[in-house]
Length: 82
Image 1 (cartoon, rainbow, N blue to C red):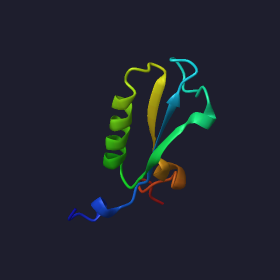
Image 2 (cartoon, rainbow, N blue to C red):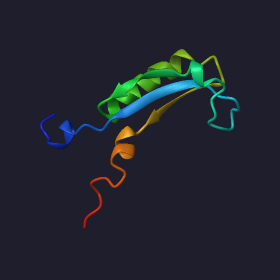
Image 3 (spheres, helix red, strand yellow):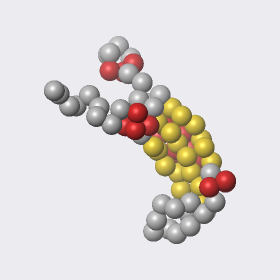
């Protein structure tokens, strides 16, 4: 973690639940959502996502997602210049 960019906090949320339809992203029961956690970077979020996805591989309707919270908090991002 010697680079300055490695220390930049880019929050990610991992969550999952059973889908109402395999072709969509609507959850069957919002009260039953599994909020796995919030992670400081994509790498850690992906590890958590992968672990949960592997645990539920036998349930075809169960899906886990990574939400890029940092994009919601700063939708303009660092790429734009004035």
